[in-house]
Image (tube, rainbow, N blue to C red; front, side, top):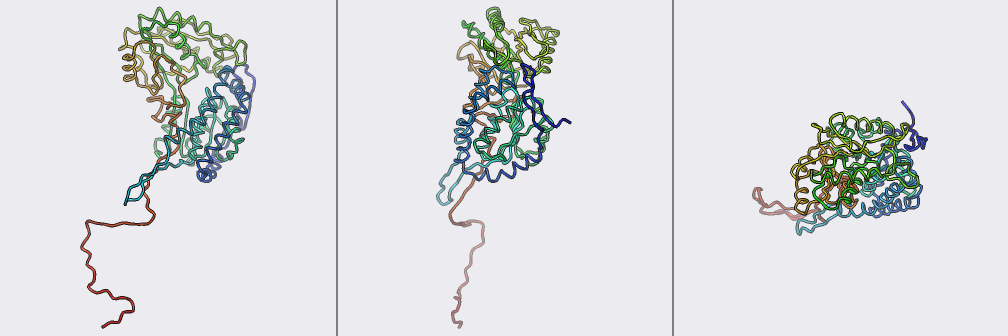
Length: 484
């Protein structure tokens, strides 16, 4: 087995970073040792320290963004927005903890006081993805720290440098090294961390396959909190609208931002027959104009490469497979360089495919499905085991209300992209997209558990029913009294 992880830049193939594979048992032991002291810190102190962390990231914003761009391949402008999201997550998490898991006291007269407080779970394992290697794990780590948990964070083996940099910022903010650790490793280390008996919670963002495997491994351990965010086969439905250019932009933004490597990216563009000939040429024309290049190119690209050559190969194979099943290529996906994972946007009319595969094609590939009416559009949108994000473009308020009521998803938008969710709202889905534990503003919910209490300053109790009669003795002799 290799004893180190090596990271390469997708855009150039150059080696970027290497580090030793960590010891899961040792990391968990360190986290457990630190857990008691961190939980005893006042909430005010923990909040002060995560705010210091935000300041550290702010100081290192440009080198941090450059590292993200190099290791993921995403354009520098987009990497900068990720760093801003890391900074912004701190204040949002502080607000969320106060609103979602605050303390309450209720006077109860003779029954004393009724109280509600929250406790940390203990040691939390955070497993991060490669598409947002700083922002998404940070969205678990900061709420977990505020709640009083210690964290063992295993970044994706494809983006370990960003994970290590993120944790260095926590340590630079004087958060103790044992409170948040970066565990370098691959799938084997991830499995060992999930299954370790010293871990009290698993917070995961990644593929449905990996999330399902985690769920199975922990099926007999209900005491370990598990939050899963697992992507989607997201629909973008277009009804009648005169705003053709705007609808085309929303479709392109939904499908091709981050080279399609977003869990909320639109995978299926569901279009009314009456809109097809007006909308699809506009989407194709816009997609053809998109610049695909390395992260620091001038002019700035809209898309960089996908994460690696293996992913690019699988996406090209998927494109060919969909065509062989009866799809029609509207805009063929191309690979400009065989040795690097750059892909141009691909558009396929999949209406003629009898059994469209219900999978998440994690890249710049958009399937188009024609439907006659809203009924058929909703049925097609719900024809998936996933349920993360869905958007409606066009129509009126009544159409959106029906869409909102009948679509099964955790994020439902109108005249907005499927992606770009707000951190000030909950983020997550149902079905293969998640386990009803949304992140973002609701992350506080799974980072602490509620404890209900009643209390009085002095013990006081009576039993008024169900006892035999209390018969006091006729005479009570006091100590020292003379006997007759």
